[in-house]
Image (cartoon, rainbow over all chains, first blue to last red; front, side, top):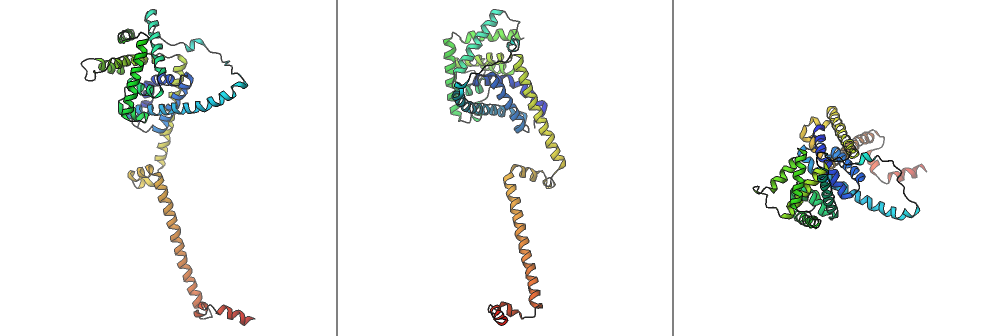
Length: 200
Length: 150
């Protein structure tokens, strides 16, 4: 059984990745935060008695299911919104502090390197968002979460063969898109090395 | 950054999993960059994540406290041992059916017992009555009695 400390440590380790992955999937940061929070609550509520080793797989599964629930609700909501949109316009009158929404970047690098890295990440994010949902799911779980084929298949609820197919297509599409934008292995390696040296 | 190490190991030519294609290597590097980027979120997002985490941890603590309360108060199944207890927890539907069946059996058994008791009373009544017992078994007796009263 996971203790509260172990659960907290686990969530600290995965929450940022989970948020970014969800944000790429739903393309809305606020919705992504809600989804991650829901997933965390469900994990604590339903699977708090499970050993810590099982938490990553369970959390990913819950996260994927919560995303699907969000899409289902969104579909229904969009229908009503499109029907009622002609009756009024929505005005977002909230005051936002621009300092709150500025990404925290390392200030140890030169501006040119920071700019290049930022642009590269934008390109990668854009390429990732262009992938079909199932391909993106498979890619994120296999390459970002470092899960094996069987674990990915378990989370996605499909066969090992389907996971391999989705991954292969996703990797090919992503690489093609990145190459089209002028990004190759050397360029990405250079950015990684500069990133690691600035981090250390 | 254990994740970075694992990816770098995969990209290392001496590693057994190094037979990645160029596309896969590019994908690994891209996810590495995304992973690094995900560590630099804005303050609002980090605060929201922290609140969400605290809520989840508090939920777990509340759940565990509740579970300890139940265990301390104990139930009848604990007297039968942990094996029985865990069985009944895992097969709640089956347990409910067993309990319902037991209640029904008890009800029918009690009814049967009451019938025997009534029979005893009726025997005593027949023996103590002024009429002979055969009179109660004779279907024409009631008719004869009514005709006699008229």
